[in-house]
Length: 497
Image (cartoon, rainbow, N blue to C red; front, side):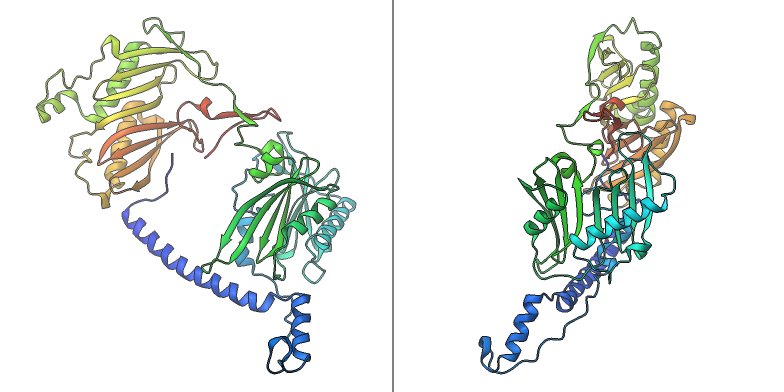
């Protein structure tokens, strides 16, 4: 799997320096902003009344020895959009109100323009949501000018929605088109408050949605500043009708509400059950692996013969490990110790009974490589290697120091191996993936048909090749190992990383 992206050690050092400086600056800015906003914004009616009473009660009141002037009531300034990262939060159709990476279907498309009557009704509904649940008055949002956009799911698994966006991204709200039911609302601008009141807020939201609170409650965490003060908090609450809601807080103030169809939707931060992508209670593999051993001398129609598989294997090994005769001469090994020829017992043929994978050949070459090769397409499903390296001067990686790992030498080696194994026309590009832990490097080879391989090195020696069926595929091996079905909707999808 992918660990992290970097090009070389110089980039690592540069990136690390930038991150350290950026973290120090941002941490200081957040701390400064937090203190400034707390001083300026945290004004409740109770606090003001208490301060005023203390100031007018005379000397000695409330423990004071002399009268203090009443604090100046600060205007309802707005939390900075920069702190709330609205550009990231509002990038998708559904605003992100928590730190959960929630799935958003690629099958959404912008629909026809919304007619005036429906747009006005949606704006009125959004205004009610923000007035009743966020306690936001007209001084912060002009709902009459909110943009209203219709979105339609081409897959037909999700109902049409209307997205309302306030001027300057001051808020974003998504409603169902049919009934104008609330799905998600985020309030980017608001005066901060003094104390969080999640249970009271949850009760109000539940009543607004025509339900009461159930028994389930989940504290979903949040983020803190360097003093340990909570800057953001997230909570999940069960409703009496089986739905769940998520409440999002910034500076103790309710700023986000999301309505989920069930608990699994809440846990993945999505509104629709069709968007559940990971819950094992809902999402299953379309087809489990089911292989039985066959005869390599009787391949199925369209499958490669043993001779063709052996040729592909030798092409790979000769490129990745150098030619057998040259390695024997260089290392003083015997034919028995370094033999690329396959014996009958070193290759096994398996037949796919799942209907979703290919038949394949498994090669077990003791001391060199274990490799599964797809019988029709000829791609390497997986390979475990025993420290392979090519001794040629322009391909040898074992003497390259860690600081230079992932450089042009590694790219050249992977390009050479991929082209020699699959053909030059099959390879699209190679790129460095990661350099890590003082001795490891991974290089990715992207193929023309969309699949890609990750070459894993330790100390300049090839240790493993991982195959992924598509560029954003989340599980290595067979493509069908990433093909899942949402059992609620019946929608099939490839799970991504």
